[in-house]
Image (cartoon, rainbow, N blue to C red; front, side, top):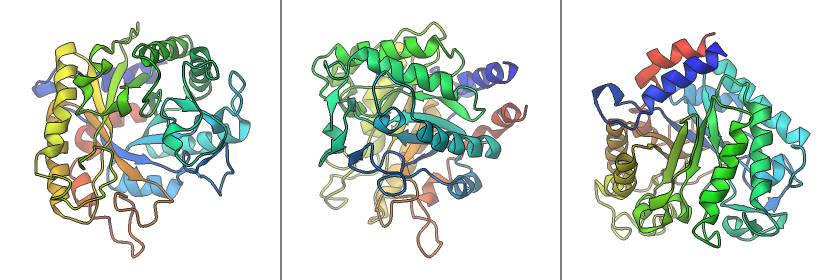
Length: 356
C-alpha cells in the first residue's frame, strides 16, 4: 500500500493542473499499438493482432520514453459482455505488464474501441459494432468491463491507470458518453482507489474542437481526485492523422500543433483539471513536421501535460507515422524530437517510486 500511495503522490505532483515553476512536469512516451489491430473481432492472436514485445520496451527505455499507452480491444479481453475476462488475453496482458514492471516502465491501459463493441469483420473499425448506451451495449456492461479490469490488473507496479475509451464519437446523445464515463469511474473506484482514470472527450477527443462540443461541460466526479482528461490531436487538414496531402496542402505551419492544442488547454486551466494528450503524430515525408512536433512538446512540457506519441508497435511496417526503428536499424526521424522530451525529465521522482 505504501508503494501505491507514494506513486500516486509523485504522479499527482507531476500532473498538477496548476502551471508554475514547481509544476512544469510532463512524462512523455509512446503508444505501443498491436493488441487492438485487425478488423475481425475477437480475431486470432498472432494473425489479426499481437502484443508488444519485451524487446520493444527495451528500445523505448533506452530512449528514456518510459510511459506506454497500451491499446487493446474490448471484444478480445471480454468476448461476452458482463462475463469474466478471457483467460488467454489476461495472460497476454499480464505478460506485458510483468515485463513493464521489471523494466521500470509506466503503463496506461487503453480500451481502443471508439465508444463501441461488436463481433465480426468490419471495413471501418472506428464505427464497428454498437455504441455504448445502446440496448445492445448498455452502460452497465461498460462499467462491468472496467470493474473486472481494475480488479485484475491493479496490483502491477507499472500501472499508471485506465484509459476508459479511445475516441468515443457519435454516441447518440450529448449525455451518453459523460454518463458512461461516470459509471465506469464508479465501478473502478469500488475496486481501486489508487490509480488514475483517463477520460477522453467525445467527438474523437479532438483538442481543437473541444470547446465546440459537449466536452465543454465534461465533469466527472471522483472522490479520489484522480481523474485526467484526455485529448488527441493531429496536424493535417482534418485533424485525423491521415496526412493525405503534402505539408503545404495540409496547411502546416510551425505552431499548428500548439494552436490546435489551445482550446483543450484553455478549458483544462479554466476548470483546474489535469490533462494529457494521448495521441499525436507526424509523417516522415517532410522535415518541417519535426518543428511542429518540437514546438508542441515544448508547450506541453511547460504546461505540465503528459503525452504519448502515435505510434510504436511491432506491426507498423513502413507506416509514415511510426516511431519504430527502421529495417536498417536506424531510428525513425521522429525520434530525433521525441527523445528530446524524455520520461527522465523527472526521473529522480519516479525512480524512488519504482524501487520498493
